[in-house]
Length: 101
Image 1: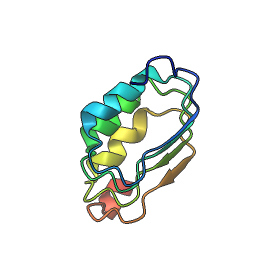
Image 2: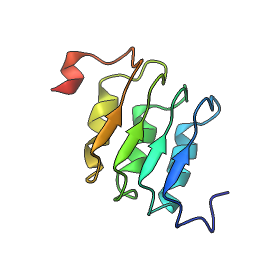
Image 3: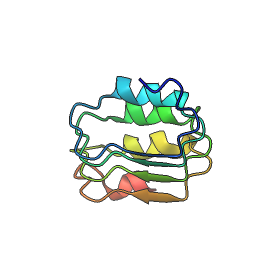
Image 4: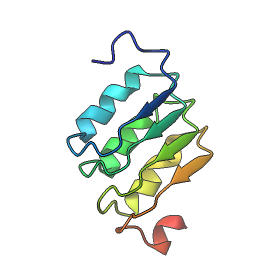
């Protein structure tokens, strides 16, 4: 569905409970993406977040607020995003101080 949209720079998928890890893998076709909002996308897991890293080299802003109970491993999955400068995690009920270390 994202074919032909390679120049897309911002994508908001707020309150999209049907977005899954497989859907996030499709975002690899958007190499110019700089800002991504996945707020209240309850099926997103660390596996889906890890899939973003290799392809989204320009992603600098990521919002994963209210994404159910993302565990600490979700933060480790984001380590492969080299340009990430802003991360919004409000309502991350599964995150602990161990994930921030």
